[in-house]
Image (cartoon, rainbow over all chains, first blue to last red; front, side, top):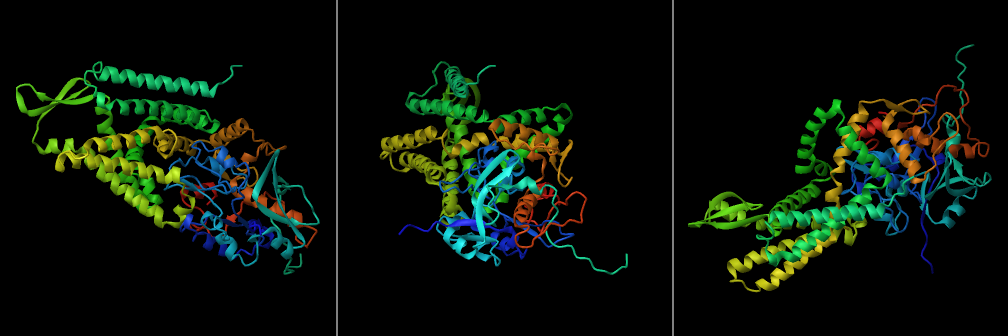
Length: 206
Length: 384
């Protein structure tokens, strides 16, 4: 029987902003005490919408290509690892170049740090910390069959468009099956504020 | 247009440094008069390592991002209006980051302790061994005085000292002390690598374990040589000497290829700090989505240039021009909002329509250091 192929699927629209992933991430052994996941309010003034962003582990990682110290390496199974400590010179190139805005800069330690998909866990078949605690399934680690069975109205996609550049990733994002997009055009949200519903409290006549 | 030949350039530089070192050995040892023929294998291994390290370093410098940083680092350092500050910073950063390994302390106390002992053990050992092997440094009896030694550097007499002095004991056992430091550091490093789950999951034998084994082997065999002639009447001295030579020569041959190459890459960290210093006081880049400053304009423009050289096509039609002009927080927000758009009309999600101003930059759900940003630089990158 072939070994199950586990994959990482993210569905930000399911995120409830509970911060479980942030706390769990900081417990990962490869970056003890520091959370690599980004969890942000997209526009807190108007909406509770939150954005959980993990490293998407690009097939051709821009962060690694622009690294002057050649410090970012990809494992044979496609996980783009955090900067190798002896090499990283903390230049900030990767932080600025990542199309998903993922790497963080630990200035005191002169070290870029980022999500490495909990390699200590995923390399032995365990789910990443964030996915193991996410109560809403915004971060999901499982097989293709499992996610398709649980979310029949969604489909995973791993092609993202940034201007003229297409980036394919190891991590998949869930989109509606009815939309059937070839890729997600990230710049299409350039002028979007946040999602939600306008609520008018009729407190004044005008 | 002149065609670039990176390999040819690297070979040329490799030959130049190797031949230069060979000439320096010949001249420094006074036409090999003070060269110890028994150490010839070490010399040739060093010459090979010199070629290999220069070759790799030249290839590395020709990568577009490295070439950009190399050039900019020097430009920013020698900028007349910043030169004095840079000189002061060079001294403080060399002391704190290189001599004291301050940044490794921040990465982990055990990691720091191990690295500090290994580094200083190796520096002392190299400072003693290489001049001796090259015949640049030698000792001879002082004419007319059998109780004194005279130290010579490049054939010039430096100073005399009594043979039985504490100074002589400490100096002639310099490699023993450095071996102790390296052995202690290697043991700590091995202990950490065996117990730390995070380290265990990402470490590789050739990259992380082999260097420790090599350093340990060199140090132990070196100490065994001293033990053999001091307490064991030279028992198995020849065998240990050959074993020691093999470990040292293997390490020299491994240097250009493995983890030890970071010794030569690491100083680039200084260039990065001068570049960032200059960027912090120059014009800032403002995000073309939220309008907030997120980096120096110079850095963003350099990065655009590097990305083009690497074949990336992040150009964007319209006012944005290039994706690099969008700040990292807005990239994350757009990434999520682009998915939200896909769901629009499917299950009732909708975008706010009542806002007409520029979209706001997202804010971390938990802005505590470690949970959101990791430090002051992250706070600037992420608009805190």
